[in-house]
Structures are given as structure tokens and as C-alpha cells.
Length: 184
Image (tube, rainbow, N blue to C red; front, side, top):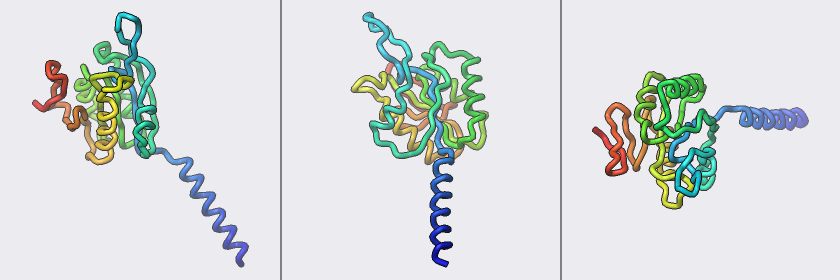
């Protein structure tokens, strides 16, 4: 009798381990470029979008939330057009995840958020930075942390998180002069 109980116990542990290893995390992080991923390109201080920094940022911050990442594109948001936003919309729509964070350039983040507003039953949070994540005084780590917390607590919808605040895309603007986002 004890052999069967031990065998059942071992099978139960094996099943739990298999289920844990084969479950999809609730959170998906898409990267599309922007200042957050910029690097110096040449000695003239010009920038280009580099490899995504999101995994490094989350590891340094000791984030314990399970997540998947995927790069959709590596573009400055000023170079994005309607076709790029359609690609982002399709990727986010097809993702089975209910919680989505998107790192994006701040110049056209609001336009992309508005495009994504047609998606139902998902919480989508866009964030970016005013300084590259590689810089010591960058706001990238703080903004990413806010996005990770926001996506886990907000109801379904599309949001922008910047400067320690959460915004809805249809009532937000980027104040270039003050280098911040604000409600309108």
C-alpha cells in the first residue's frame, strides 16, 4: 500500500513540475525601439536604436514576475508609420497573454496607444524613456518598473505610464518643453 502512495506522490510532483515548466507567463513584453534602447552610433553623438535593454533592466531590478519578451521592430518612433502600428496591433492582438507591456519611443507612443485601443480583454501598457537605458541617470528603469506594476493592477484597456503617472491615450500629450507627459 505504501508503494502506491509514494508512487502517486512522485507522479504528482512530476506532474506539477511539468505543468509549471509548460505554462505561459501572464505577461508579454514587446519592444519596438525608441530612446529606451538607443546607443551612441558615432563620435558625433548621433544615436541609433540598439538591441532591447528590457531583460537587463528587469534583471538588475530583481523583478520576479514571469514574463516573455519579443522584439517586433527596432525603430525610432519618429520613423514609425501607419504600417508599423498595424504590425504592432496584429502582434499584440494575436498574443494569448492578457497583460502586455510595450517599450516604445515617446514621440509617437500616444498614436500607437490609440491604435491599440480597439483590442478588448487585455491590459496593455506602453512606456519609454527620455534618456537611453544605458545612461546612469535614465528614467528607463523607473518607467519600466511602473509599467510592470501597472499592467498587473489596471483593468483591461490601453494605458501609457511615464514620469510616475498612468495616462489614458486619448487624454494625454507629450510636453516636449517640460520633457514629460501630462493629462490634457
